[in-house]
Length: 425
Image (cartoon, rainbow, N blue to C red; front, side, top):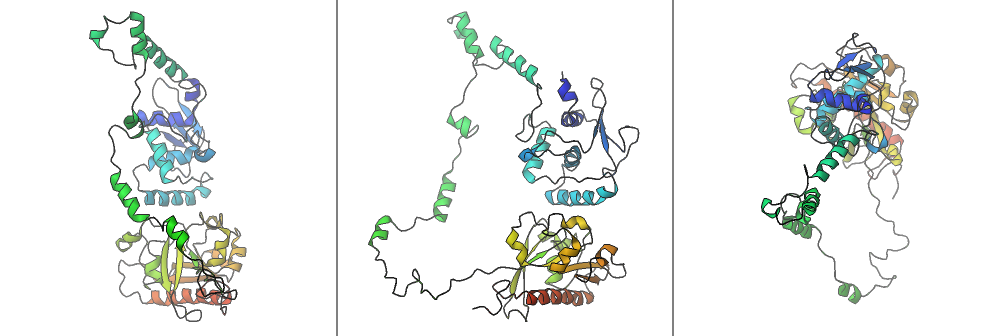
C-alpha cells in the first residue's frame, strides 16, 4: 500500500500512471476539465491511476525528485521525456527545441534537455525496469514498511536466505537451521565484479599494448649523452628562436532552432557546395546527429592556403577564449538563441560579431532582425521545390556570406595561424 508521501509525489504518480496504462490528463488550469492536448499550452497534469488512488493534479512546472547533479528537473520535462521514449536522440533534441519555441506563447518556462545517460536512467525507472536510481532522491519514509516486511520474512526463513538441503535438517539443531535459512548468500569475485559469467579481457589487453607502447628503458635514458646548450639541438633552441604556434581555427555559430533553414545537417552542402537542400532531406542523412563540423575555405585576402572552420550550434562547451575565434553567427531572429552567449543582448552581440539571417525568397525579414542593425546580413534563397538542380542563385548567396566573413576576419587581423596574427613572423 502506497504511503501518503508517495501519493503526494508527482514522480510516483507518473510512474503509477505508466504501470497501469492510464493516460494522464493535461489541462490549462488546476481544473482537470479544462483539458488540452498541447503540452505547450498546458499548466497542470492530472493522474487517475486506479480506483484505489485518489485523483491527483500537479502543476507542470513543479520540481521532481529526479535531480541529476542536485538540479531538480521539472515535471513537464520528465513527462515530455517519457512521451518521446521511442524517439532517437537527434529527434528528441529537435523536439525539445521545438517545444521551447512554443512555450513562451503558451504556459511559459522551458523544457530541460536531458543528456543521453540521464534520459535512459529516468525512463528505466518510470518503466519499472529499475527500482532505484542515483539521480532520483528517495521519499522520506517511503518503502520503509516494505523493507521491514522483507527483513521479517528473511528472519523467519520464509524468503531470501541460503537454501538448506532437506536431508540435513534432521542433523541440524532447529535454532541453527533458522539462522542458516536467514543468511543471505554472498557471491565470489566472478559474480560480484564480473556478473553471472567470467569475462575474458585478453583482447582488450592486447589492444592496449599495441596502442601504448613502452618508451625507452631507464638504461637508455642514462646512457644517452646530454647535449650542451650551446650546440644546435631541438631540445635547446636558441634564445631568439620562436616556438611553433598552434593554429587557431575560426568558429561559425549556427542557430539551434528547429525552424532554421540551415542546420548542421545541411550547412556544409550550402557553404561548401553552394547548393541549398533542406535540413531533413535524404541527402543530409550522413551528417544527421553531429554536433560539430569542419569545412575548409580559401579566403584570398587572408591566406593563399585553405583555412579550416569549425561549425557548431551550441556554446555549451565554450571557453571564454573561444569567443575571440567566432567569425559569424547565424540566427533566425529568436532572442532565446543568445541566452548562453557572451553577449545576450542581440544589438550588442552583432556590434561585435557579424550576424547572418537566411530566409526564403519572397518572405519578409523578421522585425527583430531588422531592429538589430546593420551587423546582421540578411540574405534569401529560393524556396525548395524538391530538386537541387537549377538553384544557381544559391552560389551567389553563399559568396555574399563568405565575403562578409572574410571582411570581418581581415578587420580583426586574421591569418592562417589565428586572429591578430596578420603580418607576424
